[in-house]
Length: 574
Image 1 (spheres, rainbow, N blue to C red):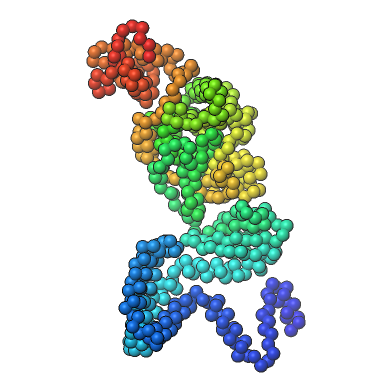
Image 2 (image 1 turned 90 degrees about the vertical axis):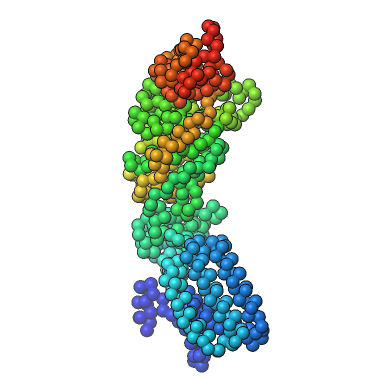
């Protein structure tokens, strides 16, 4: 027996020991039966409910047989309330609420009949047996109940699991089961931290028998010796998340990007922050940029400028809502130069009035420069991006940049990369790329962006997102992009001050040329299409200029798409 015990101990099997005096066998059997009934309490819950219902009916018939109308009325009210408010109790699905209401109604009706006639009166016993068996089938087959039972048994064996993976002494504090898996709060042995658990991530997946990549580990914000372990049986982000028009109206509000795995919204504040979006080709960078642009287009206190060095393939659909759009390296340098000029003007104005920060309004909007393929910017542009990154925060002039691999060489040798407050990492090819996008040491801290397995899945690092939580960006389609860009084009704010550095594609006398043509226009006016050809302006820019002139009474619209100056006298300046 001793040899057998040593063999079982070496194999990790602990024999069950029952200590008895020899004359308490019935008590021991009672203890074993009680443990068995508790272990399988979930499977036997319908039998427990039927027994409790029968006992309640017997007691009420013996003591208060006249209560049956009140019992029946209370049951109907409770069932109706369960249908309407059951989601607050965790019954998120309609089928779950219907099942719970049906069980409650059946038990209440049987209890009322047993109270009035007695629980043994035929056919009440037969109804209790047959009805209980039929109503038990959905309970036994329900996936969430079965998942909860599996989780309870898994966690009951956690001490042995922890010992086998090198986390001896850790224990489970609590666990919650949801639609996709379960989350447990684990307390570590003294001296251990969440870094030790992160190093055992693959071992934990093996010990729990899950698929690779199914376990998430997050630090506990309140305790350094605790961590949260989330196990996913099914991927909540296996399908794209449809985009819906955001309800944001100001850049001071968080921008919705997508949804986390726990169904909470993934939002980020972009006011006075530079953002970096990185990932390999096909990981969904353009989709994330489109989601950001759609949210900013709905804000009435931000002006957006775009730089797309792929010839405008990505940002040109947003042209109606963009104040500037550069598609060549030369144009990009000009746009960034003008942004620095605007930054200096705001800094001087804030200094004169004694303001420390620029509060965006419709008349004094924030300025966001969206740059796709940042690594393609010419060397001359990095001087301006560095200046914006360093000095633009206080005056609300910021950059949102997207690139495949933000190395120091790709981002230039200045301060732009280090000044990115918001980092969004989509799928990367190598582990070292995690630190390139999210910052040094982030991979060792659990930010494993190389394991993201679908376009649009991302990790976000920001002041409000200090822990690695996987999210999936909204899927915004081309039709939604075009509709959103045109819907908000008419209400886009403009920068009040004239800019001494005009767009590179336009001559320095663009404003003068426009005003000269309007003054020389015939009584029938000039068509917008002709003004576009003469001035070289884009249609959105031209319409904004004409709208500004019309508000001051300098220009009148004489027909559909035809304008002329209201006072054609020479010397009148715009």
